[in-house]
Length: 338
Image 1 (cartoon, rainbow, N blue to C red):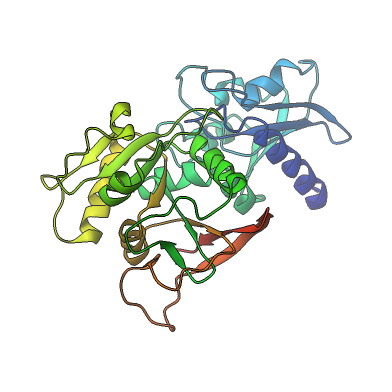
Image 2: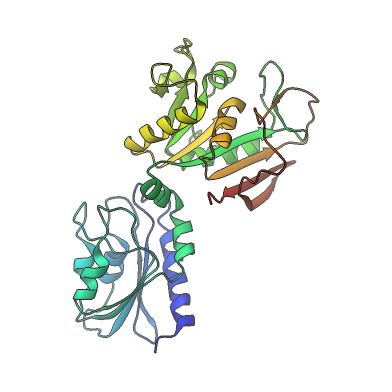
C-alpha cells in the first residue's frame, strides 16, 4: 500500500526542484523530478534551461541504473515527443521503475500523451497529486495552452484616494523608486508589455526591465497618432491601430490577445493607462492585478477605473500577496475566472 503522506512530501520536493529552473526554462514549463526507492531519495533533477535536459533526464543521469522497483515523482507529465531533447517517456525504463506519480497532465498537445504509453509498459501511473500546487507553478503555461491567450497581469500605481494621474495625465512619480524597481522585475519575467497611446505620449516611457533581465516586447494600442519619435518606438513595438480595431473595446482585447497568442506571447503585463486597464477589467480577461499604493492625495484627477460598475459585482479577486515597500504598499490579487 502506498504512503500518501510520503507521496505528498516527495511531490512537494519535486515542485521545489522545479522552481530552481525559473525563469531560465521559458517558454517551457518548470518541472522537477524525484526518484525514491521506498526508503530514501536516490536522485533529484529539474529542467535547468530551455533546450537543456528535462527534469526526468537530469534525475536519471545521476541514478545508479542497477536499482530496481523505484518510484518517480514528477511535477508535470513526461513529454512524449522529440524536440530539442529526447522524449522523456522513452527514458522511463520498466525494468527500473514500478511506479510514477505525476502531479498534472501537460496541456500542450504537442508534448502530451505519455501517460497511456507508460502504463502500457507495465509501470503503475498515478496522476493528480498536488495538482493545484503544480498548476500554480506554471500558471502562465496553463493559461496559454488551455485558454489560447497570454496570461494577463494588470498593473497600476495610485494615490491613497485612488487616482493614477493628475487631470492633465501627469503621473511621474506616484510611487517611490523601490516600488518602480519592483515593477521592473515584473517586466523582466513577462514576454510583453502593453500600453495605450495616451500613456505612450504623456509618459514617453522606456518600458524595459532597466537591466534586471530581458526586456519585454512592447505592445501599443494607438489611435492613429504619430508616436514615432517616442522612446518605445525605437524598440519596434507591436502596434494595433484603427485598421485592426473597432469601437468595441472588449472585441479589441479579444483580437489583441488572440494575435499575441499566435505570436507565442505567453504573458502580458498591461501598464496603462486607466482607459486601457479599465477595458481589461470590464472584459473580465485578466489573471492578476498588481496595485501599488502611495501615501499621497490628489483630490481630483484620473481614476484607475473608467466606466460604471456596482458594489454587488464580484470580480473574483483574491489577495495572494501584500508587502510594504518603503512607504508604499503593493497588493497582488489573482482572479478566479469562475
